[in-house]
Picture 1 (cartoon, rainbow, N blue to C red):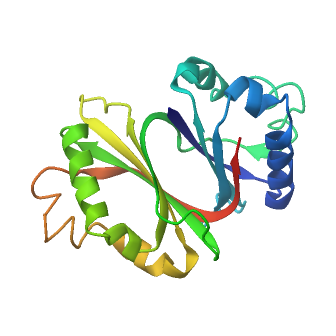
Picture 2 (spheres, rainbow, N blue to C red):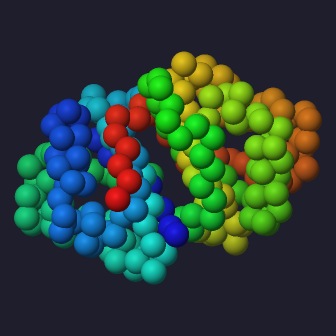
Length: 224
């Protein structure tokens, strides 16, 4: 499996979300037949962009469809350019940042039916070895640290290498909104397991700087 992660501004978030949900529910449709999506998370970023609300979309899909999705993420064909012309009609507003694909290697579900509002955070940073980093990540899972900061689901992937050849990891945490302060503190990377405890930064398991950090509310999840 693979996943793509994209964020961009919108001129009317509620209208965009309604359009997005309608596209997700079309069968046959863009997400089912072109992207071949298996799972979607969509929401509003906590920070605006140039005075506009911004959305975040995370999609899991078959790795065999990587080339098609890479072409879609150029945003130069329908429904973005042509068709409903979402860019020209200012339904979505470039730039698209972040906008990338990653190999999805792990999908951890800690709470399949959370009863409270959810948020999502996307993190990406360098690693000396993806396999070695994944072992450390799973050690954190075993210690229940992710559960303690409200995580209900984690999508874990390997991103593209940096220009200098450094491997990267990508983590998507869906977490309870009531734990937002704990998650923000965790993402500062200045306490265990990053500083202190297993000292993942000092021991070279986590290589800064952070390549991607975005956070938002989860307003829609859809499994195909």
